Image (cartoon, rainbow, N blue to C red; front, side, top):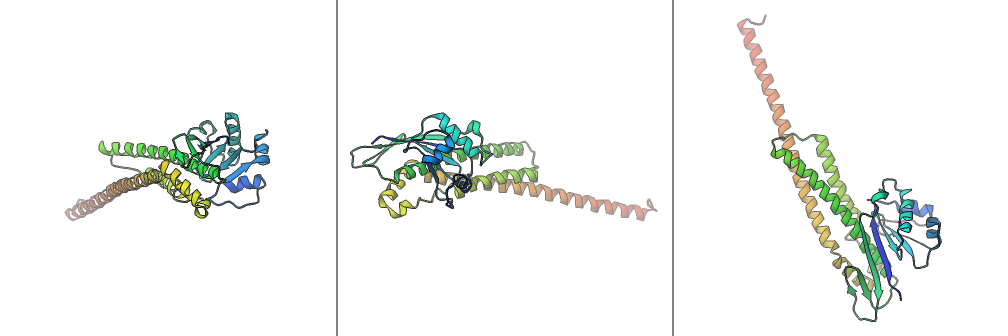
Length: 278
């Protein structure tokens, strides 16, 4: 049996699978846990060309797409443009920024052999393509989120530099925008990508469960998830510090205003007693 190739792309933070399913005439309500699998006549109508039976595309709600047995860039661009019609925020120019290529090979061997570029299994099982696609989809989505986290760190570093220069005032809007980015990052990573959730087949098939766990460990998804979670908590702590400094400065400013008003009132009283003010 010929090898099966996979190409995963993380093109956005969220894709509404139900909109695409309705457009494609698929009578099913999709949840976050399951991908939308497109193949056969549906793919032909999207790409406007003949499609091999082995070719399919898996679309994940957390913004990743996995192409199975696709090698031509034009086909990938055509499908990305199709998704763009449902999710206009997608940057088509940089749609291939976060990608990963992988392949599934078959050999007469007793053990499954995992490498950075391919996996070798003894025989074909129907769940292999979906499980590999799920791992790759989550991996590229994490890669995208990891880079976004780096941008938030750069923003906080600039704010820390300002503090070191004695510029202690930080506007509420700036604090709110930065906090919103951290919350969005946490939502996209910890909640939406669902690193800890497993496909349903892994609960009913021990072979599928063991294979998925090995792929999960090999791609270090759990470790990357924990690192992102830890970094997110650090970001929250830093933002708490910024917020406390900002509130302290505002409180001090208000206290000085009150002191000035009290002194002003005392001066007026003294001037009235002295007869300087009629």
